Length: 225
Image 1: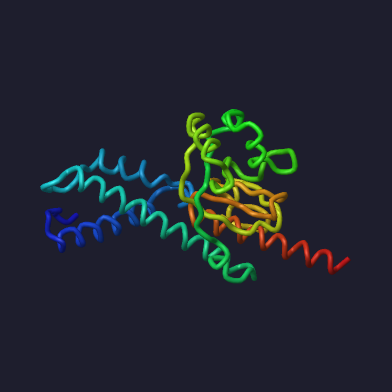
Image 2 (image 1 turned 90 degrees about the vertical axis):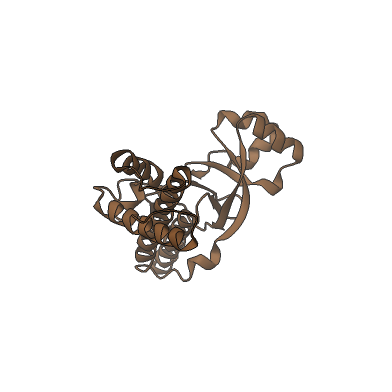
């Protein structure tokens, strides 16, 4: 690992070396990329091997962890792109857009929102996925304040089309299949104009692709009848 000083070239070399090492560690992990927590892995490596000599240990550790996060995101994106290539679903990235989301920690926390809790429901039931997310713009300032007091957060996320239902199966061999994904971190509503939300762009891309692929299958099945 390169020495980290205040020199710009040192920082660039350090980051490049840290990312290369992160990729090596994740490729050597005995689990799929989607199951790796990059922060936990980075901290484990630091605990085992320590950090190189540096003028600023705190910054060195932060940059090392950031390198693992960035490399994990790139490797996960590659896995998702490879899976999407198997299905004729067009340019999924063009469908995914940034947005501000209200994230609630659990179903019980929704009670603090009163009638506004209905924004997190889908035809009277739970949304698809594993999170409670809704666009922040639909809530009033008072509702947002109540949500925050109940443990909610307004965070950056992503919205995407959701034309057909998607299930989560973490034991899938592939990260994406029509109507199924192996990753969480999202929710979707069929009663809100078929829209989904995710915290991570890679997750949004995967779920959107699985939904569009399943919708295409359903259309083909209908045409065959």
